[in-house]
Length: 117
Length: 113
Image (cartoon, rainbow over all chains, first blue to last red; front, top):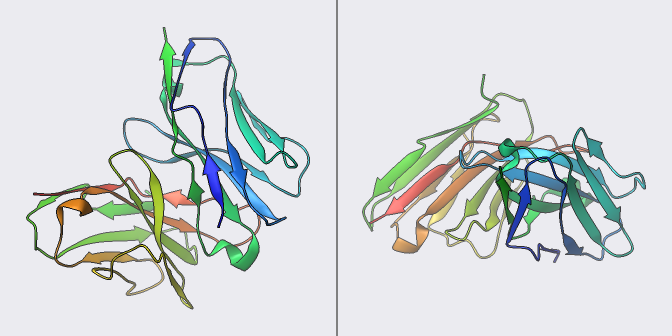
């Protein structure tokens, strides 16, 4: 079974600065997907960014980028120019590419990101 | 139009009752899921369902059962509710295939008293 570990229960960053959230995972599979989801106080789960394991290039979405290290099984999220609206719980998630991903997403325990004005 | 919608958003009920949470998706995706988020915010899959197969997480009590009247709906039925069932339940929809993401409903906060 796959596991996802987020070692930072809480992170704090000054507005406009850069913060990196850590995520490691354990799997014996070679093909899979990795995701970062954001959950603001509204409770809605919002996709931030995704990475396909067979792609070596790190995914980027505007101010959000990842550092994907497949050999190290590491998938960190970097948020640049932090904004107050970035304050939320951030979840790292894994999905197998085998069986169509029928097992769904395996989540880490989340990192609570606080933005200091 | 909301891609995945759940009703109700909040549900307060007494121990021993039977309740249902409804989920509808308008994305045309072939796979739907139910996830449970506990009081510590930990999210765990409960069920994965498409028109061909149902996959049940082995830790889910058999008091929980998904019912799919059609491809756009996956309702969650819970019998004999217990205090420990209090949580937020999320429905999600996904098109199986490469590079797809799961779209989540807004969640249902269930409180058992």
